[in-house]
Image (cartoon, rainbow, N blue to C red; front, side, top):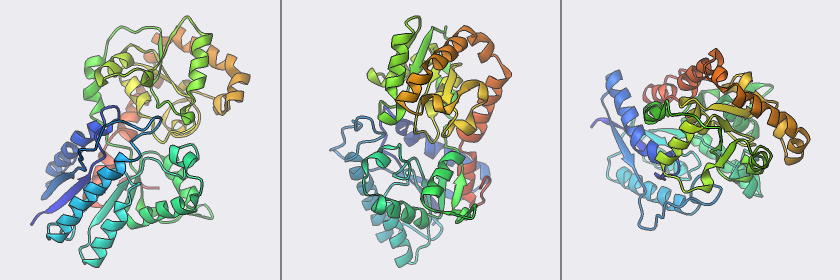
Length: 372
């Protein structure tokens, strides 16, 4: 029996990239397996249920109740495979959302049934991030920190898209000892598998630009949409749109991106930031704070000082500087989008952050290509 790479897929929600991952990840791994000459089968396990509405909890990434139905159904299917002897030693299980209690049960079955499998967990967010939904809503972090540590240790490898995210997690889990990272062999700074975005957005290139500035983030406190709305009221010469306030299809969203000149962020929580990259692929300039994942990903010309938007009051105190920066970027759009800084930024993002190479190589071979 050949070994399997089993993907526990995120629920495919049209308004999130999870719908794209549902079809893209099996293709990415199959392509890599063929290229590497491996004898392995890729299986996706879903958690479909008649109760699934595909409606996201307002301000959140997923639906807080339906995601548990989905993950429980996945675990039931995987448990049945263990029971039938369909899971064998050396199989690899990719948990596409590490915040999943099923990781513990997989480890339980693997060890008690003497079927050693590899668990590869992809981290998106958690209670360890004070500005994430979980970090804000969970009052007693005693149980949630213990849960996150348990998931980390039960997993053979833990994948983080950026150094910022990995460092944030390690600090909250108290994984540093005199500046040295403990359990370093379990951490992989991998980027995420988004290379398909180049092809997805290719048809939207070279569309005439408008004096349009987009807010493509979730409408949630940690994204500070109030700052964007205040800028809109202060700069009537430009068009400002909060994407999530319109019921956009993916095509409509991508069309808006293609017309925009600036993608704006005042985010207090961001462990990767897909929308700024999507915008860059269709020649929209990012304007982001010098903090979070942005700090390592973007050149200075597209960042502003972090303290300018660290709070509503700080924004009010420094509003004139943000307004001035936006006007500068709009007036010099052609120069900036054709600059070396923009093209080199796009190459870096495509190669180091929105790419499956590091993650897929490590999952399939166990040889970490990039580690800290």
